Length: 265
Image (cartoon, rainbow, N blue to C red; front, top):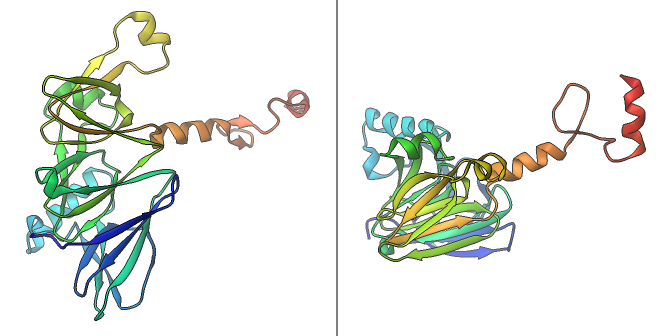
């Protein structure tokens, strides 16, 4: 294998974290801010981009790799964790919000997966984290997750995070699955991705499900999440008590306090 081989264990259910076991001189790369804890003799280092060979060793290669991460809305930097001890050491990474961590062995997925731009959590050193542009204009403008997605390339382990429960679906040749655009987590490179408008004026305007579906056609594998973070955040924001002039609901809504607030304006 070109990428480092790492062993892992998932802990938890709805608030998961992953334990990664590193042999001497093995390295794992993770998003900045995802560290939960680590054992001694592990060296932590901040780098530009993902540190893969695809990024290049020169200054321009590193700047280009970091620039691609800006396009996807991620930080310029990533963090590497290297075991500099003589025995096995462990490092732990936590999911940023309720959901599942999906381990993906890229060597069994033809060396590449395409995922939503904030899904990547960690990977073995050597896995390339790049940008995947949607080739179709419809998918780009109305795709929910936008024109740009992430691609993970290599032959090592990668860990992707998504919200709620995760559903893995293997699509047969010619089989089509229509899903909410925000619920798509990841797909293999051979899946055909497009956008389809909801049929019927009443359904489109009053159905509450949005105007567009993501249409995924096989063959290939897709991963779907039940609770996109954008949906969770909008519900939390709508229910949050706020002071005058802010968003969300008033703290007195639903009670007598809300009635008396009418006379205090």
